[in-house]
Structures are given as structure tokens and as C-alpha cells.
Image (cartoon, rainbow, N blue to C red; front, side, top):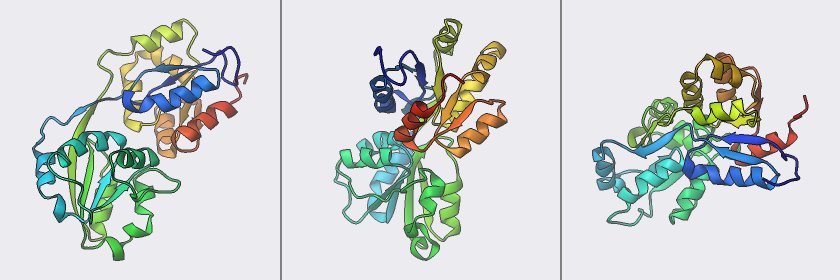
Length: 260
């Protein structure tokens, strides 16, 4: 950990899945802080690959493919592109810039992505998703298990024909929460960053009452109002709502009054 910088002496827990944690961790380190990596969601391939293999076989039938996360890209594309290139006429959309970059890194650039709000609501607000433009189109949504239904339901209401394809599954930390509790007991845990409402629920449910009391006393940085609302519903008071994505989270961490 650096001896100087705005986050010097601070340990910030980064709870993104391992594959997405490095960029924010590097930003924290560059500001002098220590990033403690503790993924709240463990990501694994879908238990049944039949749905994804079937989608690969009818890829040319779709007009639009939506990827809800970088994990969706990572777990869907190897099957979708196993025996063919991406169809030139098949448009793509991503919930946020991280997902768009994951697609571009795999040779699929130029996808639709919200400019500010990186969620289903942000996608649905794009002109390309208006009823007069999406109606009648065939849409594939590549996602994890147990995801929100808002996107699919809204597109169907606007006249689209939607298939939801589960390509990965999520679960809570298999090793439990001992690492966090140990850091709290040693007074070396200053803040937690949470970017998933599902991960937040795993965190609160997995801690005992002593752990939840520690959590209530710890600043919780979240990049979305929906996650902030869930945190407050779960009894967490020290909730810091930041701008979206890693860039918004690091700005929130740097602007926070640590002496308050």
C-alpha cells in the first residue's frame, strides 16, 4: 500500500466478481489505498447448456442480442462463436460500458449502450428500444440465472419477441465471511464497495448479528440508486451513492470525508 495519496491508510473492500475487480482495485491502489478483494458473487457456467446451444443454432433468426454483464459475454460467446462468426446483421446492446468493452474485445464493436444510466431502465430509454422501433423484432437476452425481468417484460410489452438465455449462474461466497470479520476485528476495514443488489443481499444474510452491526457502522459505496434503496431497507445507514461504474465509485471514495 502506498504511503501517500487521498486513500492512504484506508482499506476498501471491492466486492465485484474476480474477473471484474482488477480495474477498481488498481484505482484504489493508485490513490494510496489498499483494495481487499472479496467477491460477493461467485460466477459459474449455467448448469444446463442446452438453452445456450439452442440459441447458437438460431443466431441468424435474431435482430438484436442484449448482454446484461461482462459475465454474460464471457459465458455466452464461446458457445455462440464455437463454429461461426458473429452474424453481420445481428445488432448488439450492452447494459453498461464494461459489457460493451467485453464485446469489443471479442471482435464485436459498435453495440448500443446507455450514456449514463447503466441498467435495464437505461437501455429501455434508448430510442432504439421505443415501441415503434423494437416492435416485431426478435431479441435474445443473454443473462445470469435469477435476473430481473424488467427488460424482457418491457420489450414484450412494446411488441418484441424475446428469448431469455441463461448462460451463467451466481451464488454467494462459498468460503463464508470470515475474511471480512477478521478485517473488522483488526480495525483494518474502512469501506465496502457493492455494485450488485443481489451481492448486497448475500452479504447481509451471510453475516451474524455482530457482523451486521459492523456493516451498519461501515461506509457502503454503491453506484446505483436501486442498490442504495435496498441497503437502506436492510437497515444500513451509512450508504454513499456515487456516480455509475468504477469511475464513479473511485470519485465517490476520493470525495468522501473520512474524518467525519
